[in-house]
Amino acid sequence: MWDLHTTTDMKLLLLVCLLTWPGITSAEETGFVTVAEGDDAVLPCSLSSKENIQQMIFDWKKDEEKQKQVFYYVKGKYYNYGLTGQDQQFIGRVSHFQDELKFGNASIKIRNTELADNGSYTCIFPEKQNSHITLYVGAAPKPYVKPIHDTNKWSLLLCEVQGVPKPTVEWKDSAGNILPAGEPKVTEHNNRFYVTLQIVVTKADNFTCVATQETIHHQINSTLWIHFPDRTDQNIQNTSTPWIICGVLGVLLLVVVIGAVLCVHLKKNYMTGTFKRNFILLEINLKLLNIGL
Ligand SMILES: *[C@@H]1O[C@H](CO)[C@@H](O)[C@H](O)[C@H]1NC(C)=O
Ligand SMILES: *[C@@H]1O[C@H](CO)[C@@H](O)[C@H](O)[C@H]1NC(C)=O
Ligand SMILES: *[C@@H]1O[C@H](CO)[C@@H](O)[C@H](O)[C@H]1NC(C)=O
Ligand SMILES: *[C@@H]1O[C@H](CO)[C@@H](O)[C@H](O)[C@H]1NC(C)=O
Image (cartoon, rainbow, N blue to C red; front, side, top):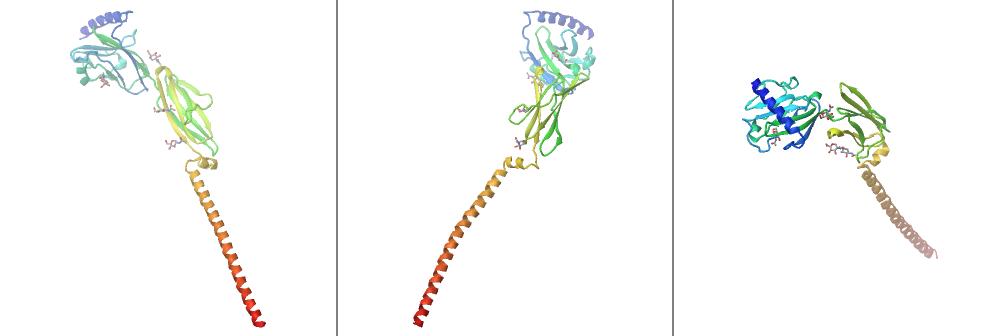
């Protein structure tokens, strides 16, 4: 078995030499996979003819120069199943997709990725085709965000991001404007970067902390909903309160108008009433006068 492997290795070396020679690099595809440390990574590779590869050979190697043995499949046998020689780094963490072999699919899964897994991988079908894929390990997980100090006028927000390479961190409001914040604090520990960015906000909004790792095509964010429940100016700006105020004002106006109309009406009635009463009194007086006369 080992003999088989080493002779194939020689052939593969020759093949790799041929294929990496300028001008002969045909049937190659390049791509990348980005994962957070500790996540599983699926590295895609398929034979372009889509033919059944159960009785074929395919080989996965890492890093052009070091040629670390990641996964090796020979006609139904593979590392830890009839074949030996896998690099220590990958033992027990790499598997193929058995049910996919009949469709020419030689993709592999690397479980529980480590920073050391970062790098370029080559999937080789001897004398047929090879393809390259870059695995980036260290994508930032969702930022950790929280308000760390509150008053009824302002709130101090914290955003913590971790990853490799160093993420850039920004705070944005709900309109997407980048908000002026202080300098981010960056610490490096065991080759990982830890970035914190604080910001003081004075208005109610949804604030989003965005982490970007441009070189590995990765962006991720977390949002905080900030409001100031004790603030009156805030309440006026809230969506429901203007309608309540409008309603109250409307009712008041109506009451005033109705009151005024009623007053005028009552006054008129009162006036006509007193006038009538006076008129009757006058009549009575006149009658009394007549009697007297
Ligand atoms: C190969 O199999 C993997 C794992 O099931 C899958 O994610 C991938 O899409 C497949 N590729 C193709 C070309 O079907
Ligand atoms: C990850 O691998 C890629 C491709 O080899 C390389 O460009 C990059 O610098 C590596 N990142 C780290 C943190 O080693
Ligand atoms: C903030 O988000 C919450 C929940 O998604 C939503 O109900 C609210 O209307 C948003 N507020 C603003 C000011 O965008
Ligand atoms: C935050 O991430 C979500 C989901 O990925 C995306 O739809 C949204 O546009 C992002 N927001 C910002 C401000 O980057």
